[in-house]
Each structure stands twice: as structure tokens, then as C-alpha cells.
Amino acid sequence: MILDARNIPAGTQLDCDVAIVGAGAGGVTVARELVDSGLDVILLESGGYREETDTQDLYRGEVVYPGPSPLHRHRRRRFGGTTTVWGGRCAPFEAVDFESRSYVPYSGWPVSRDDIDPYYARAHEHCECGRYTYKAKEALPQGHAPLIPGFESPDVEQDRIWRFSLPTNFGKRCAPAFQASVRMRVYLHANCLGLLTNRDGGHIAGLRVASLQRNEFQVRAKYYVLAAGCLETTRLLLVSRDVWSNGIGNHHDLVGRFYCGHLTGDLCTATFTPKGGDVIWDYERSYEGVYCRRTLNIRQDTQRREQLLNFRCTLSHPPIPDASHGNGILSAAYLTKRFLVDKIPPEYSKVLAETSYRDVRAHVKNVLLDAPNLARFTVGWIRRRILARRKLPSVAFRSPNQRYCLHFDAEQSPNPDNRVTLNSEKDALGLPRLRVEWRSQEHDIESVVRCFGILKRDFEKSGVGTMDATEETVRERVREQACVGAHQLGATRMAGDPSRGVVDSNCQVHGTDNLFIATSSAFPTVGYANPVLTITAFAIRLADHLKKLQ
Image: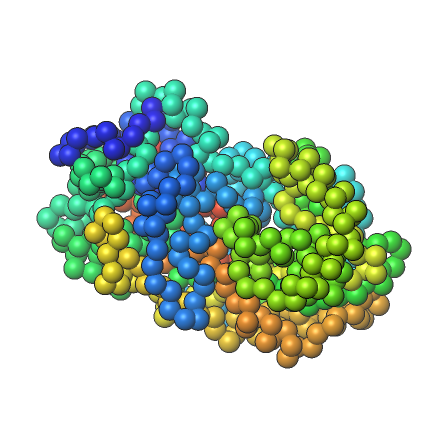
């Protein structure tokens, strides 16, 4: 059943076996996996089916310079969460991401990639992104063809891919199953105000919940799952102080610490002279029709040997703000970007998620001179993106002179000084808003620069291309682009030892016997990959664990 919490009388108590806070990727996945389990489940969602201004405003908070974008920009407080607007890009974390690396302080998960592989395979069904393989030769009909013909490198792989979901709106996809289940109650407009504990603080006794109409009621369960996203999950732990003055799970002052994102942006422009054919610049379809894109990866053995953080890049269109590209389609996107803020996933274009402009006259000239091409593109975009169920992920163009931008995604290392705390301002529900401190570290930036150096060296050695940048220009470019804030990770990290983390290998909060977390805040390290697939895999694993507890 799907119900509206605004209709619940104040003072009501709702009882269930499992209470889940948040209906994004993690919460919806746990709930969907429990539909036929015989358990009574309550799923609480702050928003409704559509975005609502007053509800979205609850996300606002303070970002300490030079931090990422405003806290409300890249998240959605509605049924389905941020999967209502995500780009659909999927890849699993790699084996090296789970390892304890001597050159990455605070690294190491209490589980391995082998432990999570079965759940990644099941997560593919939830994300609707096809078969669980990320090798081009296995996934693509033309997978035997190299991304860059003639390119040889002992340190760089060119057989890996991104896969793309529809992109799937988790809430919309699972709503029919939730509506039909008599043991599943989804409450929209239900805001969790905090967690109640027993006297010794080791057991969660209930949730304080209310709509924006302030009709406060309680939800009591055997087990509780916080799946409200990285930042809101952290806030709920910090504001729940009826027994613990620093918040639940915060015995070692770790809740909110190690907040991470991804370093991402345009690395440089490469001019290719491939041997035996063009580079593969476009999206490809897998055997089952899923959009995929080839990538260049630094090999895991090379990362370990050279003490590098994880990194990958793709071939992309020229930088959009630079009107010298002469492309009317890119210029049209640039000129209309003010209307695209919050609609373009930042992993595709950070500049389209910002509002400042430059060289407007030159961009207008590009649009006018390239009008026929723009018209043809618009027709194809409507057919392949607007009307299609499985949508073309983003704009991609063939470069007649074989010049492509290298767009990179890179790992940020854990830093205990990057943290989420409460500030003094209150939201409409009376809860303290968040204060986020984020900064990149020099060795994060230097790792990207060194990866660039490997690519540049081996491009030139193989004779397949040159790059228009030096290590110094790349260093400055990476430093300027830093983090867009679209991926919030790591503030309630997983560790086997309570002195090193907030949750254990089953995502259970240390020091409580019935509280679990199902969101990216549990990630100890973050790799380069978008978090949704890994959130989903761990949510499936958590649902299996909850079934065993009965």
C-alpha cells in the first residue's frame, strides 16, 4: 500500500518488523527485496511523487569553501530519490577499491569484491543495465575492435566499459509491487525527525516522524534501516541525542567524518592518429540493447605498483564553453544551460550545471551557422532521448579531425577532516541544517596528474595521438574542477573495528543491535564509479541479512 503521512493523526503509533527511512536507491531496493519475505515493512519517504519546493528546501545547508555545489542541488527529496534524475551510469567498484592499500590511509573494506560480486549481478536487474560484465569483448557485438586502434600500453586498459541504466526511476518501477502488497506500507510526506533509543542506547526503540503539517507520530519496529542518502542519514544519527550526546554510532567521533566525492572533469584534448581505423567515440549497444561507453583505465596492478588512486577516462566532445569548437549543438546547449540546471547529471557536464556565461556572441554565431546540423540533431535527440524508454545517455559527436576531450573520473582518498556536522540554523521541521567541509588533497590531484602522464607517454610511444596539455596545466585544471558534489559518500564508513568505522560488514551500526544503513555513507573508499550500482548491491545484501535474522 502507498499512503500519505499527512493523513495520520498526531500521536499515532505504527508497528512493523522493518522500518526503512528513505525511498531512494537503497531504501526502495531493501523494500523490494522484502516484499515477499513475510515481513511487515514500513517505508518512509519525505516527499511525494513529484518534487515539492517546501520539501526540497529541507536539504539546504552550508558548504564551507572550497567545497562542492549547494547541498540541495544534486539530490531529490521525493519517491524514488535521486534516481528520478540520475544519469544511469553504472560500473562496479574494482577489487583494488576494497583492498587495504599502504599508500591510501584509512583504506580497506571488511568485505572483498568477490564477496559482493553475487549482489552486483542481482543489482543489474534492479538497475536494468543488462548482463553483469564490463569487458567490451564480452558485452558488445563489436567489442573485439579496440577503442584506439594501434594503442599499446602495459599500464592502460581499453577493454572496459560504462553501462547505462534506462535510467531507472526506482520508485516508479517498484510502486506497483508496493501498492499490491498488504504487508508493505509506503508513507509519502513522512519525515523522520530522529531515532529513539532504550535507556542504555544500544537498541533503537522507535522513530519520530511527521509531515510538514507537524502531525508527529511514531514508528516502532524490530529492525531499522536508514537509507536517506549519505548526508541525511548522517544528519539523523547526529540529531538523535536522547541518550548519546554526540549522536547514535558516534562513540569514536566518526559520524560525519571521511566525507568524500569524486574528482571529475575534462583532463585535456587529444588529437588521434590511430592505426587501422578511427577511434570509437560514440555510445555502443550491448547484445541486450543497453547503451555502453568505452573507457581507458589505469590497470589495477599499475595502481598498486605506482601507488595511484583509481582513475578512468572517456572520449568526449570538446569543452562546451570554448566557442572555438564551432559546433552549433554544443553552443545551443551552452546558451540554454540556465534552464538545464538540476536537469543535466553533473557526471556528463559540470558546466551545464552552472549558470555563468562567456563568449555569448560567438556561441550565437555557432548556432546560426550550424542551424541545419542543429535541426537534424534535435529530431534525433527527441527520438532517442525524449521519447525512448531506454534513453541515449548524453550528446556524442564524431570529430572530423579526430580531436576529442578526455573526460576523467577519479578517486578521492579518505580524509577525516572532510566532515559533515550540524550548524545552528533550523529547517521547517526544527532540525539543525548541515554544514559540510570538503577539500581535495594534493596527493589526490597528483594521482590524476600522474595518470595523465602515463596516458600521454603511451599515446606518443604508440604513435596514436598527442595531447594539448602538460602536467602543470592538467594539475591546475584538476584543481579548478575538483568536486561537483553530485556523489555524496563516506560519512558513516564501514569497518570491522568500531574504532575505525560506524557500521560493520553487515552495515549494522556499531553499538546498536537493530540499526542498519543502506546508503553510500557506508563506503570506506570511493573508487571512480558512480555509487548507485554499489548502493543497490549492498541493499540487496542487507535485505538477505534481515531475512536471516527472523
